[in-house]
Amino acid sequence: MNTLVIVRVGERQWHALDDDLVVGRGEASPRPDGRLFLSIDAWRDPVFERLAEVMLAALPRPVHTVVDEADLDLTARWQQAGLTTRRREWEYVMTSGSRPAPAPRGVTLLPVGSAELRPLRRLNRALHAEIESSVGWDRMPATVLSRPLDPARHVVAAEPGGYVGLTRLMLLPRHTRIGLLAVRAGHRRRGIARAMLTEVLRTSKERGVASVSAEVDETNTAAIALVEAAGAHRHGSTLELVLR
Image (cartoon, rainbow, N blue to C red; front, side, top):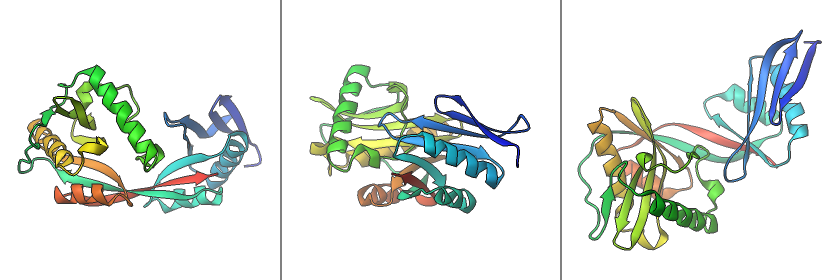
């Protein structure tokens, strides 16, 4: 590895070269909430270590990464680079289909593709502000979908005065992944979240999808109780690591 050279090939991209052959890649990806997440693709420890060293020296702090907690080798590599655990997310998996959970009186569930974009945007901004002022938006799962709002990926709870809750989905051919499930602060503890989750499970079964998954912060006891009541079981965990 005496010929190993790290080259910056973009604003946030690096290549590790050994005799002009690419033997590793590193990238820093900014998230909408401002967090900068790192990824390194390298088979050999010395390549990973050199990429991490160069990247960390060049980037502003804090920097983050996400690892499968079961991947002990990758976790150890990042820890050796100086990153420490910031939070843990449990991955829960549910079987699609369930007993109906009617929406509370006065609340209408809008299935995937039924919501209007403008009020959906207003709801998204309101939820973002409420979460930011309480637990902090950076406590949301690192995999919260950041693509432009699309009604085709949302189940929405609506009242006559406006939208009050949403479930953001990644609709894969054989799987449904929940990116975010949230209800306005003044409308919680009424069964709205449970009704939206049940709708997701019902429609997933209708489109022939067997399972639904969600990532939940280990400290979010309300969300854990919600998914476990729907029959979810833990299927692994991820760690968000940080270097400040």
